[in-house]
Image 1 (cartoon, rainbow, N blue to C red):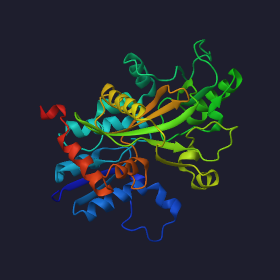
Image 2: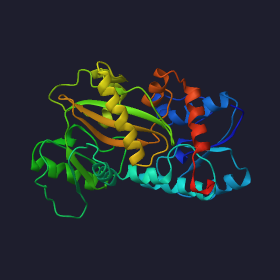
Image 3: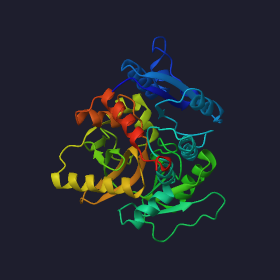
Length: 341
């Protein structure tokens, strides 16, 4: 690909340095994705401008007006601390008739609102765990249709924020306690769903109209004690020492029959289209021991650091990291936004 003018939009606290020298591993982990993307694209010959965004679009508008880029590489996951507001930044890019990477505003809206997402999946008869929403300020009541054990998580936050071993509860008293924790500590509505015991599988998808799914990936919980539920807590996902202690890792799913792989692939594509996703996304599943498959959630614009699952799955499909980023940019430039019509 010829050299492109790329405006990389990131959170204001995650603007990466020019070099990793002098930084601790913990510091690097904070902006690892941003560093990997900008350093790889620069090495490929692209002209990169990095713009940090917090709570104003003034600087973004000026950057687009002063020297319009060929593509905006969007790495924002929130706006002014609110996860569901990232869709508005993307909508602004469309109003400015600016090509960008990743998901469109409608897809972000539908997928980020986990309650609405699950309602849409149910409408399309896509299996998802039975659920209920416990909203802040409303009376605590356990619907009869829910069966313990239950899994309590945020209705809007991502990156496993608020998820711990205590998130799986087996009675009404523990449920009340965990819902209260979500309301008071995470400051969000609680999404409560039936806990599905089984294998945790991830399917990464690339595309707009034509979709490509990458090899099925799996979370391996290692030697995590049987007394603890096998769930992707914040520690499981991000705590290196915790991962090493229990041998927790991710990798290509093994011992999955071809017919099941085909079923997972079809379901991932159905979900991608039902939620109007574009660019790239990761779909999270639970595979029960009896072969029943449930979708947990859809994640547009997942982490694309070089060592993360999305990039690793692409590498397993023969797409190396520089090629993956180029492909993401091509999808951004070819997305048929309304202004193109």
